[in-house]
Length: 181
Image (tube, rainbow, N blue to C red; front, side):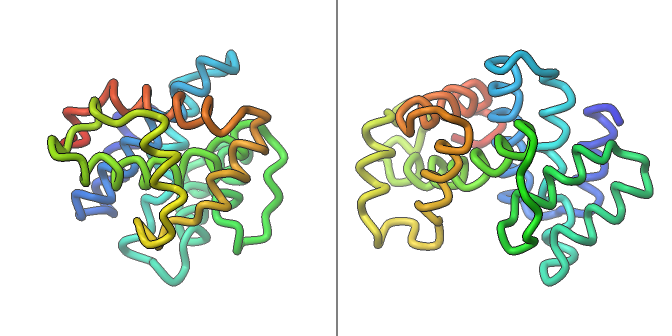
């Protein structure tokens, strides 16, 4: 599957702008980590782009329904397992670096967007690693974001929390215009 085909599939199933922006943010973070780990940025980006494509249409059966659709399209088993593993409730163990990375960047991208949106400028370029860490301590801020998953994700990648935030923040800053930030 090409990136264009993946984006077409995403937008076929997802109409909410914020969910599309989330997919773009996760795609950017996945591409960044693929470069860091010496993996294929195109493949990793596609996995990031598609990880939640079924969420809007099938919220009660996510990510199972999406994986079923992707399996019919012949996507690699490693990609499907990574998508299943990004949601802890599936019980699918994250065995590969791809799966661990998808889990690690998913919650963090959303949290970084929230941090950017409370900045006076509402621009991601004004967000620093220390601002993200400070907001993580404020339990009332973006309360729906699971901080334990953000920390767990960095641990699974064997990177410090600071480095993890920096990597994802840099990836998102590179596509700030697409994210509306």
